[in-house]
Each structure stands twice: as structure tokens, then as C-alpha cells.
Image (cartoon, rainbow, N blue to C red; front, side):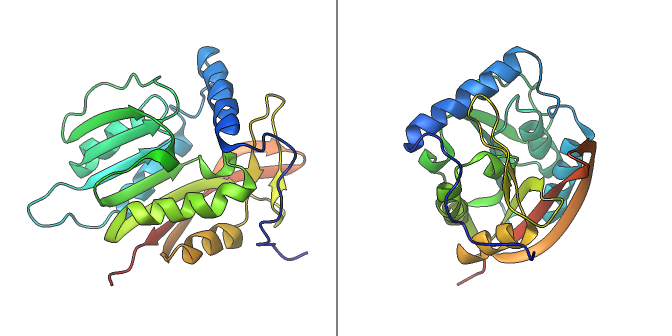
Length: 228
């Protein structure tokens, strides 16, 4: 079957957005508490960081780049963006588990809040490394639109997701209720182009992990907000 972009309805779960926020926060709190955040120091995370830095636009003359790291976790990637881009970076998460050392260049601040509640000055770079694929299906369009709204004209959005190995959008919910989605490139691209962004580049990152007979990968995509 060809990849589908029909957003349709997701699996059964909390019908209230705030209730599902609590499910996600509780799930990740348990994983961090048990030391199961293998993604924090993973090479795949570093590859997303390099890809995002490469996609970042040049700063506005006389100003530092402004970067938002959505779902920043312990904050190590936020610090990397500050140092490598000499940027003013904000790390955003539902939890306050950040423990990264201060950056050698640039600045980092951390905020505990939901992404859809976050307002900011126009951003040069927004990075969603592994958040979209945990959202309820009905919230995907609003998630993409909010990211696009936060960018300045010419700004870049980078999103990294679980790449579907079979060309289908598939829900793989955890027992605690947190959603995991295998997503197709077409579906993610359609979400962000519908939000007014233009595709830039892509990177497939091998996860060195097999599941249900599939070798899994991450897909990182970049998009640019056009100038008026």
C-alpha cells in the first residue's frame, strides 16, 4: 500500500489534551527516574544535533541566533546548540530534569511548560527531536502550525521522528499510555507544508535496532519559513 497522509483518528486514549500531557509527563518521569533515557547520550542524538546546526540560517546581522529545543530532556542538546551556533537557546520540557553544564559560548535557559503554551520572540531555529511522534494524532496539525508560527521569516524548523519501516503510519502505544508513532516522510512533510513551511533537506539515521523484523531508523527533516 502507498504511504498514507490521512490523519484520521488515533488509538483510544485520553480525549483531553491536558490529560494526555500528564500521561506523557508521568511516562517520561518514570523513564528518567529509572535511568532509561538512553537517547540522552546516543550517537543518533548527536547526528540530529549536527544536522540541525547545518540547517540553521545565518544570524540576523548584529544579533545572536535564537534557538528553541522542544522536549529538551536533560538539556545536553540545548547546550550543544548554544555552543556550536553561539546562540541564545531555550530548552523546553514538561519535566525539570535538565542537568547539562553551562555552555562555553552562547546562553541557555530552561522552561518547564507545554510546547503549545510557549510564546517567544521570533526564532531562527526550532528543533523538535522526538516529540511529534509522541503526540495524539488529532494534535499533529496544531503542533506543526505552532512551530511554524514561532519562526521568523527565513527561520528553520527541524523535526526528527520514528521513520516507518513499511510505509504505513502505525501507532505503538506503551502500557503507560504514551503514544509512539511510526511516521512516513510524506505524512510529516505534508503536515509542515500545510503549516506554510518549505522543505529543505532530510537525513535518515540508522538506530542500530530491530523490532518486529524491521531495522528501525529516525528521519530528520528540515523546513524553512518563507519570507513574505
